[in-house]
Length: 207
Image 1 (cartoon, rainbow, N blue to C red):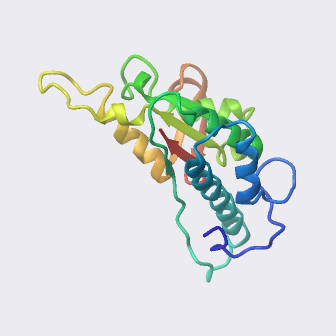
Image 2 (tube, helix red, strand yellow; image 1 turned 120 degrees about the horizontal axis):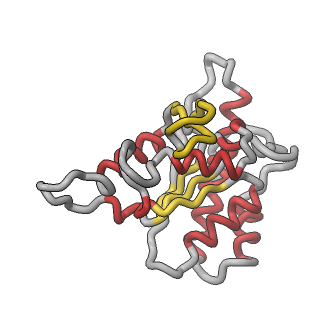
């Protein structure tokens, strides 16, 4: 139900220029121009995105109201084989809503402390896509592709470097938490300027 949250019809996006918040019908129509088929997925994604950004505006308006109702955000899981348009749909959605988006291939991640990209690198990428605007990045979209391939049975004799350990670290980000990332160092967690970011308002889409 796209009308479940209180607010004015002339709501605005939490980032970018002031403008009316696009309705689910308008979001779906925009996706229809670029994504062929996948009607149920586009409808559900449009309503979920609308509810998410309307929730952010509701929280912003009532953040000093002790009587305000606390509403938890919902994230999204897209299921389907390769080539059906999951990534393309997410990119088009972010472009239309004028929010930064970071696309991450989870299969390339490794646990923090090991060689390679760690889960915090997705936050560094989102910050880069937001032109280092922390407030804008904290209201962006992160698409975690190949998320299901992380939950693999590991060999008892080997360390869990790329499987469940990575998934557990990502789940902390998805649930919403404050993290510190270093920007400008040799890796997202070594050297450079330290920045604190909150993930509770980021829309996570797992593929």
